[in-house]
Length: 229
Image (cartoon, rainbow, N blue to C red; front, side, top):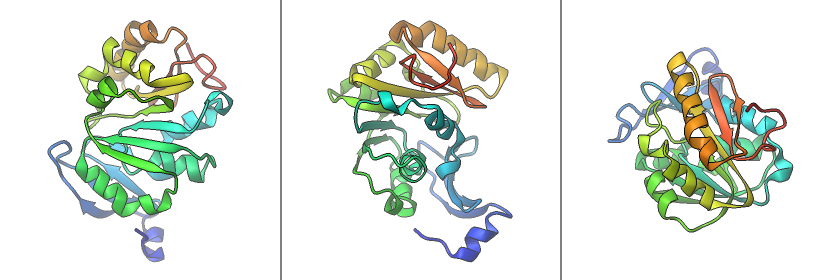
């Protein structure tokens, strides 16, 4: 959905509320226009912000694209499609997307506001990401794990079982990008514990990239041009 030019310019001065779409999953879900981009937010978190979705933008800037073996991409959590938007419009990458999103309102908002700007083949699944990952037999060259309820990752997605299921969905040489919070001391403690006690048990060559308030974990040492371990 295109917005009038005057409204886009005005959004650089202050955030413009466009629509609220509360759901059982996200009771305070809303879309706004800020800095000329659509932003999807809840009371505690930003779910999507076009090319200004900084955690994945930095990850893509550092990603060693040469090791991604193909185009099939699994997106766990969608928001307003910041990931495919950036990959197309900023990084000029072509992928085929399988999108798993639990909130029907999020899918409807994405289709209303941004999908006309995303031209890659995209198939939506209205489903719980945990159940999808545990039961799917498909293989993917790139998996972007970006599931939050507000600012919390569901507990069942912080288990060895879930990480092992993600591993099994990767094609040979496939790359996993797993978004974690690291904004506060509590976030950092929890993320470090997950990385060291869970993630590395499944992905022995795992690394992380600090993207200023988040860590992006990956299954391969060579995933990022520069990374941490």
